[in-house]
Image (cartoon, rainbow, N blue to C red):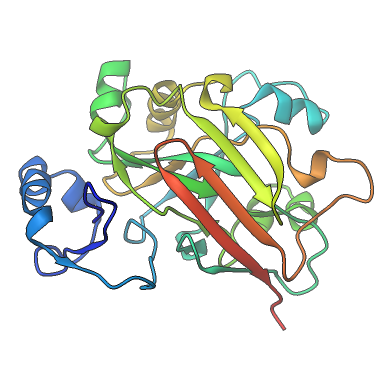
Length: 267
C-alpha cells in the first residue's frame, strides 16, 4: 500500500493478495485504509508487482478513440469491439516486456484499466455499472501487429507473455471522481508518442461496463481495458518505429502513477 507520504507499506500480515474478494469487501478495505500508517515501511528498491492478483478475465476494447481509428484507416465502430487478453500476459509496472520470437511489429498502447469490484451481469443502468467498479489502474496493452493481422481475431497478437504491464497502483474508485477526465501519455526512449485524455473515448467507462456485462458476466477482480488513443507505431509513417530490444517504454494515467518497462529479446 502507498501511504500519504508516498511510502510503500507492507500489508501482507493483513491480506494475502489484492483480488476480487478484497475489492468487493467494503469492511476489509476500510480496515486496510485505517491501518496503513501502522504497517511496516518497505525498503526502497523492492520490486512492485501487478497491483491485482491474476484476474479471471482481461477484456479489451478496440478502436475506442476516433484518432486511433483514423490512424488505423477505419471508421469508429457502431458498437464496442471486444476481445479477450490472456491473464498470463500480466506483469508488473517495472518488469520487462519480452518480444515474441520473430517479432516484427510489437506496438504500445496506453490505456485506462477498470477493475471490477462487484459481480455485474446484464447491467441496465449507469448507476449499477458505477457501483461495480473496484478501482482503476494504468495499462500497456502491448500488441504484436503482425501476429494480430493473421486473424481472424486479434488474439494472437494480444496474448503473449508480458504483454499486459499493470500499475503501478490500483486506485480505488472513490479516489477518481470522474474516469472520463484523466490525461494519458506514453513515451518511448524519452520521446512522447501518445498524449490524450479519457474525455476522447467514443464509449465511456460506464457504458462499456454495461455493454460487456450483456455479453458475459463480469466477476470481482476481472479487468476491463478501455482502448487506446492515437499515436501507436502502426499509425506512423514507414519505417514504423515498432519496439525493439533495449527500448524503454514509460506511460502514465493521471492519478494512477507512472510505469517503466524495458523491452528485451526472447533469445
